[in-house]
Amino acid sequence: MLLHLENLDSGYGFLQVLWDVSLSIETGEYVALLGPNGAGKSTTLKTIAGLLVPFKGEILFKGEIVSGLRGNEICRKGISYISEDTNLFTGMTVRENLFLGAYTIPNKKQVKEILEVVFHLFPRLKEREKQIAGTMSGGERKMLAIARGLMSSPSLLLVDEPSLGLAPIVTADVFQALDTLRRSGVTLLLVEQNVKKALRVTNRGYVLEKGKVVMEGTNESFERNEHFRKVFLGV
Amino acid sequence: MTPHSEDRVPNIFHHAVRSAGAITIFIALVIMVASAIDKGPYIVVNTIVTGGMWALMAMGLALVFGVMNVPSFAHGEFFMIGSLVSFYVVTTLNEYLLRTSVPLLPVIIPLMGMFAACVAGCIAGALCEIMVFRPLRRRSQEQWVMNTFLLTLGLSIIMINGHQLVFGTEFKGIVSYWDFPSVEILGTYISFDRLFVFVLSVIAMICFWSFMKFSRSGQAIRAVSQDEAGALMVGINLDSIQMLTLCVSCGLAALAGASLLFMYPSYPSVGLGPLYNSWFIVILAGLGNVAGAAVGAFIVALFQILTTVYIGEGWGFVIPSALIILVLTFKPSGIFGSVVRGIHDK
Image (tube, rainbow over the protein chains, first blue to last red):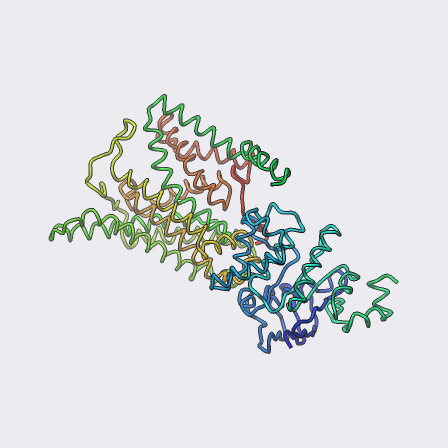
């Protein structure tokens, strides 16, 4: 098991958002985390990424307890978090952003090799190598955020709302890129508002409602479920 | 090249020319040339020499604000520490020199004083981070800007009075670092010390710029100032970067204090003047904008020199203060724009 959350409680300050959340992900899986607005999907990812400290419960990564570690230590363990608002270094060039993505890797030669792989995945970023990140379009920024997340060659990628604020045609590009990643063996945990889209690309999922896991299973089982169809698919 | 990218370049060019920063630089240059024709080229020389040192102070202040969101009012005290350390190192070594005579030593002693001051500044900065800012950051991030403002004000008072308690209130100064004759530039005689100060500030700025641009740690500092959460996500240790930032900026302030010892003898509140100057510069340039601070330093230096020449010495602080009020009223983000993000989040 790559990642396992055990009875996790988490939130912001005094506000508890997650209640007793448990989930697990195997190596190579593409898992969706679904749920309505304010269900705690992003909070779950932030807690795994170490940006929030869980109140209770444990996070196991590769069999090791990582809950309570800070974000930079989590990154060194091999978890990459791509946030909703991308958190790019907007005053730096694309190339500088990517090199900072590989901050945890001291070996320069290795960084260059990863950079080649990433440029192969996102050829458009290679064209824009010298552009300042803040001057790029929304879709390109998302691409850059994903690429930067890949630079630390993580074993688990947490992707938060890759389609948020993007035109449908650009969204397709982003999902294409994620799919290529999955086929190259990266494990992905995806948070997505667009439930239909998410069900089409992932294998398995969890449904969060009001900070609790209310359903888990394969995508076919969701589509057969009466409650799920009514709430998320509108049929 | 696509046609699209071809017409983008002149657009950016036009935008830059019309920006407030470019206009201000242009006006400042015109004023400088006009006054140089009127009163003589020494105005240009003085502007460049003093501007260089204010730039070192202001860049450090802007850096601390950009990376740590700390509006430091204790920055002048690192200037004071620098001048104090340099004074004691130089005078002690000069006494030693009277007893023995080692060739070349008189030339090297001032450099040793400045180096010692720079190191002392770095250490003092690190101590401040460990003893003051880190415990506060651990305890609470609420009202961070206000709290650290008050905290640095307190630090400043403690350091000023600490100086008074231990070293007394008398002026601890030297006439000049080197006994070399003055150099004539554009019909103006400037002492070797002043010339050296300018060269030193240029070297320090180039070193600082290359450090920020090319080194891994420098890039990490810029990353933290642009997006703290993003920096955490790529594995940057915020604690060590914040420590490094304070070390670098306090080291620069101490270096400025040490190299200006012949103009500003060390006494408890010597840092206040340079502190106000750096705040003028940082507000004029835009909070947290390090490159802007370097340019803004020369503009503020020019204004102060012009005020002294045309109106009188006593008005040296009045005109820049009036300028700051105008900047805050009409362009609060500063003429070069602020690059700080998320300052209101804290």
